[in-house]
Length: 190
Image (tube, rainbow, N blue to C red):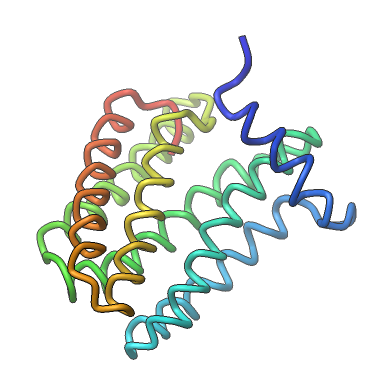
């Protein structure tokens, strides 16, 4: 049976990853995401939603890139297993804290950020105290994708002042909370 990300990884490997120089290792892409988080946060906090939204989408896409690069070139590292999900959670958490609180609901923002904190704390506890193997799974990836899409759609809705896009973002983000809960109970990764 193929791993859950096989087809996405293969697609990225035959398209976008061909443009990535061989000298670039997956951890460099993760480090780039860490660097982008405060810039995205700055743009969102000061209401520059176009620039923040474009950088957010790019930063979220780097999550797919570094994972696919690591798996397709057999360059999975312990550093990447720990810091890739942390970079994701910082990106999503900071964007949700600002955008969701400002335009949707404080309680939805608390649910998104709270679940991210619980997942990261539980993951580290499981890895360092129970010595369990930490690896990506489809629930966590679906959660990340739905969060990224929901926040991207929300940003687009704010920019265009489209109430139906904001409604769509709300639905997608509630679905992402459901996947966060499922990934917590079906836990194998951060």
